[in-house]
Amino acid sequence: MSTTVDDLGAQLIAAEGAHLAHNYHPLPVVAARAEGVWVTDVEGKRYLDLLSAYSALNFGHGHPAILAAAREQLERLTLTSRAFHNDKLGPFATALAQLCGKDLVLPMNTGAEAVETGIKVARAWGYRSKGIAPDAATIIVANGNFHGRTTTIVGFSDDPTAHDDFGPYAPGFVHVPYGDADAIAAAIDDNTAAVLLEPIQGEAGIVIPPEGFLRRVREICSANNVLFIADEIQSGLGRVGETFACDREGIVPDVYLLGKALGGGILPLSAVVANEDVLGVIRPGEHGSTFGGNPLAAAVGLRVVEMLASGEFQTRAKALGEHLAQGLESLVGHGVTAVRVAGLWAGVDIDPAAGRGREIAEKLLARGVLVKDTHGQTIRIAPPLTIRATEIDWAIDQLRHVLP
Image (cartoon, rainbow, N blue to C red; front, side, top):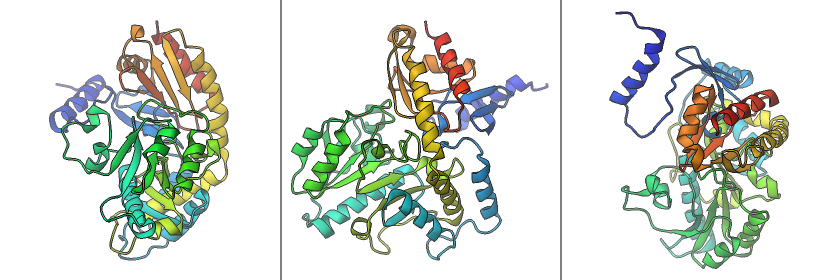
């Protein structure tokens, strides 16, 4: 019996369902190739990618400059572990530190590893520099946060899907409402080591805090000798029209947590970036990773930082983000109840009368547009920063078509 092209996608999805743990609920499309902002499935149908792997593909699929860096390094050296030096790690760390305006870089692999590293650094700093009593350090976090999926991180999530049935959880985290600087000030005591925040909450639906919130948090942390840790894993590296989302309010955190786009859409790469007085508390042997800082990742990361240093992608994201915002705002009252846009990053709240977010995502899929729903009624839009205005217009037309 012959297998048609149409059968192939269904067979591959069925194979996943039979043998892959069901920790995701993907849309029914099987990607086979991609270039720039377009993805092609196994049946040859093309889709405009408005998700960018949750900002890991800020520079699009297969950016030639990033591929070139990866190919060159693949032929030379891919992995040594940090047991030895390699000739790419130093240049990468130097460039990333300069991009962030900081002294030191601690490279890891995934975003969750960067967050875990940030937590360890904050606690060590609290004990070794601030003088917090042993095992008493606390970190203030925000309601609605999403920082990853390790057991420590989900322990301070208030999303039942992420949190429930994975305890017992690590203590030492204090919750406050997101966007409420007064609540942060009230929560600080002698044991507070850090405030850990997403400058814009991504998984929550692109929730943008009130104007001045980040500036006030910076002031509060400075006045109380508390570290301000900014999780820029999704929001950073050009996504919002600035190098970092913190730049929107002209503030610099004590610690940057970076990931996703840092790997150029090629491989996992994350980093914690801070000054010597913070990251310098970590001693040899206390933290590490076999793959953290490997030569291949460092070569790719260096190319990404070089591309960001030009400012081109930040400028594109800002200008095209204004274009995206205008198009999305025209849909409010027509199947959309609200939109929140920061650069090329948008949360679109779907009117329940128009359907659930998942239903809208599936209807867009049928029309050649890839988005993903979150928290029931919201769809997230985060195209590669290489997208064109005409492609944004086409995508908005498709969204308009699937709304009542």
